[in-house]
Length: 521
View 1 (cartoon, rainbow, N blue to C red):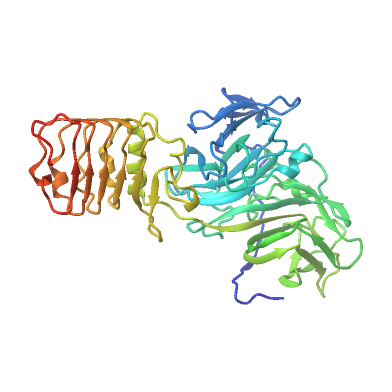
View 2: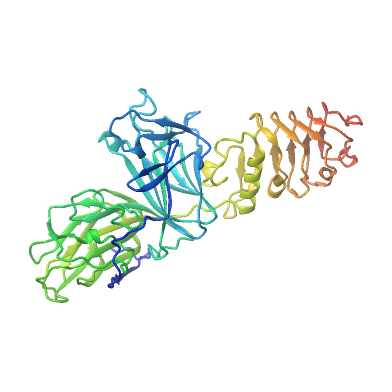
C-alpha cells in the first residue's frame, strides 16, 4: 500500500558512450590494516599499520591458519568495566567536503580467549553519528569475516571512525581493517550529505555467481555480491559504457542478468533478509544487450511490495539506472518486474543497491572541540577515549565531559577527579565558555593556573591536591558566578588576591600552599 505521508522520489538516468575504464587507478584514501605494525602491499595496493591513527587498544595476532593478511591481526579494546559505554576512535585526516566510502571489516578469530567462543557485539560510530550495531556472530559461525560499508561526507579536516562497547558487549571489541576511499561528487549525489549519510544494506550483481566484484572492476572498490534466484540467468553479448552511468557501476555487473524465459512477470526477494522499518535509498541497474530484440522492444514496469516504483522503462544497450532517494520499507521486500503492455520482451535486471538513509547525529561546537584537543595535548596521559566527537553520540561522551542538550552542543562541565593526570592546564580551557564546573582535583597537574576570566558561567573550580605552581590569577576574583574555589594542597605562591578574600557567596580553600600571606579563615 502507498505511504503518502512519507516522501519518496524516483527518477531515471541513462548512460552514454564514453571512455573505457580498463586502466583503473586505485581510489584515493586510506587502507588501514588494524593491529599491524608495518606497511604491506596486497594486490598492488599499500596497506598502512594503524599506529598513527589511534592511541588506544592492543595489537593482537590471530592464530587461525590460512587467513589473508588483513584478517590475521586485529586491534582489540579492553573492556575494563562490564557494559561501560566507551568509544575508541581512529582519527584520519581527510579533505573537507569530500565524500568517503568507509568500510570496516571484522574477523574474530577467538581473540578474546576460550571463555568467549562468540564474537562480542558492539557499536560503530562515525564522528558524532551512530552508524550501526556490529554483530558478526552468524558470519563467524560459518568461518567468514563481516564487513560494513557506508558513505559519509567529511565535515572537517579529520574524520573519526569508532568502535564502542554497549550494553550487549561482554568481551573486548575489536576491528580487523578500516578503509576510507574518496568517491566522486557525482556518486549518490541525490542524498543530502549535509544532514544524512548512507549505510549499505545490500549490493548485488544479479545473475553473477562468482567471487565478489570489486577493484579493479569497480573503480571505487565497492563490493558487489553474487546473487542468483530461481529465475533464468542470461549472458550479455555486449557491455554498456559505464563512465557516464548514474553511480558508475562496474561494467562487469552487466555481463549477466536475471530474466524470465517467457513474457511474464519476475519476482525477486531482495534484499534476501528482513529489513527494519526505515527510509531507504534504492538504485537498480538495467541494460538490454541481446541481439535478438529490436530497438526499444523491451519495456518493463516495476513495483516494490506492490507499490509502483517505475513504469514503462525502455531497456536498451545503453543501459539505465532507476533510483529512489527516500523509500519506506520494513520486513521482507518483494521486487516485481513486469513486461509493460507494449513490450515484446521479458523483464530483466542486472544489479541493485540499497542503503539505509541515516540522519547525522550532529557535531560538538567547533570551538569546544579545538579547546579540548589542545587540553588533551597538554596532558601526558589523557583518558584513552578522548578521540572522536567529545559529546556525540550522547551515550558516548568523552570520559569526564558533560554536554548540553539541544541542537547547539556545548561542553558544560569537566570532571576528571582522581584520574592520575600528568601535564599542565592548557590556556585553551578558557575557550570552553559554556563551562559551569571544573573538577580536576587529586591529580598530578603542574604549571600555572591559566586566565579563566572568559568563563562567565563558571560556578565551581576544584583544583586541589595537584602540583600547580605560580600565583593565583587575580582574574578569578572578577568571575561573578564563581561560588567554589578549591586550591588547597598545591605549590602556589605569592599573595591571595584581595578580591577573593571575604567575598559573599564564594567559598575559597587555599590551605597547604606556600603563600606570603595566610589563607582566609
